[in-house]
Length: 242
Image (tube, rainbow, N blue to C red; front, side):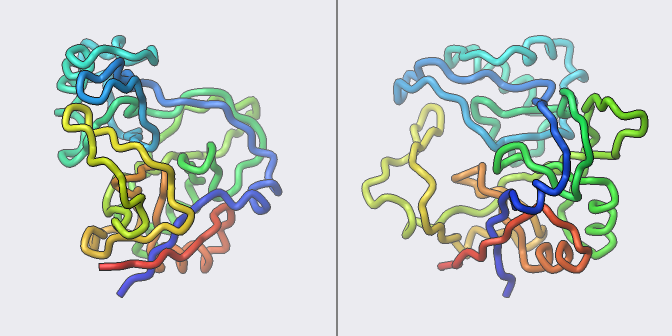
């Protein structure tokens, strides 16, 4: 049985590199304004699909400016992008699409993070992971603007949602998701537990379905990273419960 690890920025390792970047995805769904079901105005994080190219639809300029929209307008825009997205994608408010755009400079390590939920990877590290047989990796080109004459080849991994946090680590009085917008608000548990029945068997890297800013890797992924000598990720093993 696989072991599963919560992966975050190894700040000690990444501090050895001079990488600096300020970037965001090219397009995104708006936030939701005053949901008629729960009353919340909100936008999520961790739903990122850099391989989805919205230039294929004529309405793509409507996805360039972050803003909240009422439900009917949000649903119209969501319907426009759904045919381009992976079939299982939920596409909540704030879902981002397309390449990372922005400025970048300095020397990049194998893995570099924007916060703890967006991970970019050097081409050599991605090639090495794929050669090691790591499953479910999709590297997407970025549109980072570098100052140096020979910029590094940096990609973003499209890390899709699979699996769930187990109910035992969630608040006992947690309300069910809003039936209108799907929002379920709770803080990340200090001691996360993964729901074994929900975990994927076809990939070694994924986001948690009910807490999308958490990135999970299998022991296969961890072993390949360590054997390749690639730095930038801290691994915390998480318990799995059926």
